[in-house]
Length: 188
Length: 188
DNA sequence: TGCATTTTTTGCCAAATGGCAAATCTTTTC
DNA sequence: GAAAAGATTTGCCATTTGGCAAAAAATGCA
Image (cartoon, rainbow over all chains, first blue to last red; front, top):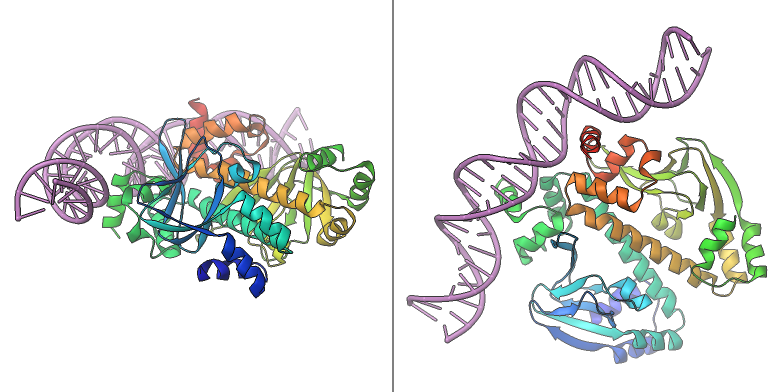
């Protein structure tokens, strides 16, 4: 819970009373490895802050190939923003790569918070914008690189993540086959 | 100017008086092909709505290779969001692919508008979030695909853009060499 | 129009990556 | 602790893409 509060406070000030309001809204849920947090076709009803574990966001392209968009590890928010904020069916899956502990808000929770905490909406907007921007900046450099540089960059940027994620998921994230990734790993 | 107003109204209601306020703030600037709208190392001071022409956002990776992040064509906003909203030095260049006509707001303009138009900030936030989301969704599928599919998808998604952009820029956007793109073009 | 410049296409070959199936290793389950 | 299920590595070869330089085409400009 502390992690969540710290995270929020990086984006805006919250006094003790406001922190209590937030804490009271949060629900804790546990996912087992492989469980879904949200699914394509359904409307995203909640936002999760990952307090333990790793989530994976993926979808199927028009050739039915599974594409991993990104991973969400501890102390980060997970949500299909488009689905959640516009209440339209999602086009992606969010699943637990391993057992996870999530702190969850519903849309209603957030709405109530925005009515009781001045500046809450601005804070949430900042978080959304920042994390979207992070995604763009993380993905877009990958296109110019070959597979081994992509892997090297990933290692550099997320040193602890690589060992915690099955190779097949990482390969799908990097846009290469798992055999290729395995070979790349061997030669480095 | 109509284009801008239409664009804004897709994200929130504006009455005639508010529309006037917006129109009064806008400055029109022209860029010649190759001119910069903003540059790496400098702080982004303004936002542009592209009313004619195409802009290109790019940066140099650690191997000094020029990587095109994306193109911004007519009826879309261009801004280095991170630099603009946090007033930190930008890490990317925005340049005119061809002669351009831009409708420009400064940070001060936007601030004043947020003080005179109720809901302006929310509207701007929606626009930011939507366009960031678009970027993520546009870039992330590319990783799973081979070069020709990436080109094919680009054509499908931006049918009119391909002929208006030099091949070298498009190649850099697709993450392939220009020779490869040329060959791909021939065989399709 | 004609020259200079820029952009695009090609050829040739090397290097990277993919596809597929079998062989190993690991982990889980009973 | 064995068997089963799952994950990773490897071999073999086909295909894709890159690198580099030269040729061809398109564009700009005097």
